[in-house]
Every structure is written in C-alpha cells, then in structure tokens.
Image (cartoon, rainbow, N blue to C red; front, side, top):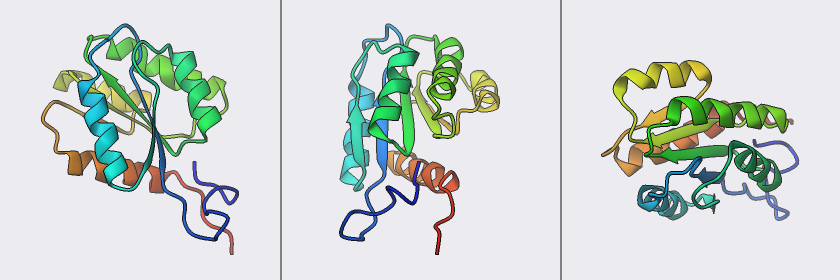
Length: 150
C-alpha cells in the first residue's frame, strides 16, 4: 500500500514496490514462487519471500509488518478455493485488506471466476509469461495506491 508516508525514500526518490510472496497451506512445491520472486526482484521490486507452509494468519501478519504493496500467493495443492479466501480474510483482520492479492499455481480455469469474485486481483496459471506477472503486479499496486497529495 503506497501511502504518503512510504511512497518515497528519504532522498525523495520513489521507493521500489514491496511484494510479499507466500505459499499457504501444506504445499511444499516452491520452485515457481522462487522464479516469480526473482523475476520481480530483477524488475526492480523489493520481494519478501515467506517460504512454504504458511498459515493465512502468518501471511497477513507478514504483509502488515513488511508494509507491502502487493501480496502474491502460490499454491499447487488444489486447496486454493479454501486458502486464498482465508488469506484475504486474514488480511482484513490485520487491517491490511486493501492490499491487492495476486495468485498463481495449478488453478483450473473454472476456479478463476470464484477467486476473482472473492477478491483476488489476478490469477496466473502454469506457463504465464513472467512479463505478464510483473505487469499485473505493477498494475495491482498502482490501482490500489492512494492519490499522491500535492
């Protein structure tokens, strides 16, 4: 969440976008999440990777503590319809429900509309070009950033 307080560095330059990448639930496959994290870093973003087997509450606390602009979730276990909305609820409970959430993994096309309706900003399946992920993260952050004060 870009706010007047943290939109720029102390030198007055724009600060890089801060993105939290998390693996909720018992999914232990993190290669894709690490590839996305590296691509976002290479694109100039600051990335916080929480590692595998995170609870929704752990992810929400990390998002709050790290003052992130976007949360990225990765899941291959098939529990996305349960875990992604649980993360959204945990973010709201921590007072950071306005932070946009993007998600990727093994997600059937039929599950994308319910996830979008639940509040997931963008959903990426296998083979999504990293340039598309980078562009969507930037768009999510800018779409939810408050207007800069004069």
